Length: 337
Image 1 (cartoon, rainbow, N blue to C red):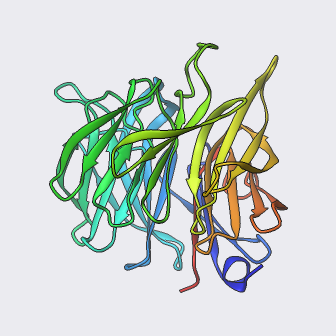
Image 2: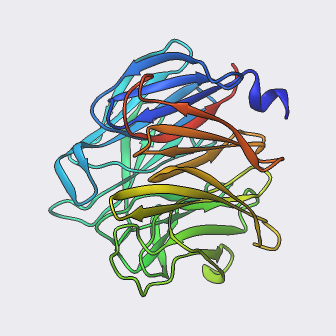
C-alpha cells in the first residue's frame, strides 16, 4: 500500500443524521475533527485548487420523495482549519444532490430538483465568487448523482425514476440527449472518459421484474454497450484512478436493511474481481486519489468500510456514530496539503 493512500491524507465524511462533516486521518483512521454544518449534509466535493470542501444540503429532514422541507445550501469548508468559511445559497433553487468540479473553468456543478416553474437541472456556480451563474435543465423531476468526463465537457445525470439518463454539453450549457434506462441512481466515470457507469433501476422501485444492473454507456456515442447484471439493487457506483469499477449492492431483509456488498469489476473485461461484505444501506462509494483504497459509507450501519483495492480485502471499519453522528453519506479523500 502506498504512503499517499494511507499515511498522510484526510477522509471527510458527511453525516446526514448528525448534521456534521467528520475528518479522519487516513493512516490510522483516528477522528481529527468534527465540523457542525446545516441540516442533512449529503454529498462532498473537494476543490484541490483552492483546498476547500463543498458540501450539499438536500433536505432539512427526510429523503428523496419523503421529506418535510427541501434545503438550498452548499457549505464551503476549510478542511485544514476545520471550519465552515461560507454558505452558498442556491435559492430559489433547492434540493442540491450531486456535486462535480471543473477546476480548469473554476466552476462547480450541483444537481437540483424541479421547482414550480421548471424541471430539475444542474446549477452552475463560479468557485471564485461562490455565486450561481447559470442553470442547465436536464428534463426530469429529480436529477441526483451525476458524473462528468475528465475534460469536463460532458455530464451524465441520473434522474431516479425517470426512464433516461440526461446527457449534458457543459461548455454550451445545454441538455443534448437521453440514454434510455429503467430509472437510475449512482454514476461513475472511467478515468479516461470512455465510459459512464450507471446503476439501474432507481433504488426506490418496487418492481421485481426490472433487471438490476450497471449500464455501461460509451461516451463517444451515448449508447449502452454493455450491461453488468447484479443480484441486488445497486446504488453507489464509482470508477477509481486505475479504472476499477466499484458498485454497492443494498439488501433488505424481513426486518429492514441487511448487510450489503461492495462489488469490484475489471475495467477491461467488466468481469467480477471481488465481492466484499459491507454495512447496511450503502449509498456512497469512493476511492483514494491513487485508486488503491476504497471507501463505502453505510447509512443504516453508521460505518465507513475501508477496502484495500490491491489485495481486494477489508482494511478497517470506521464508526461514525461517536464521531459526527448517524447516517454517513458522501465522502472524499483529501490529500495532504
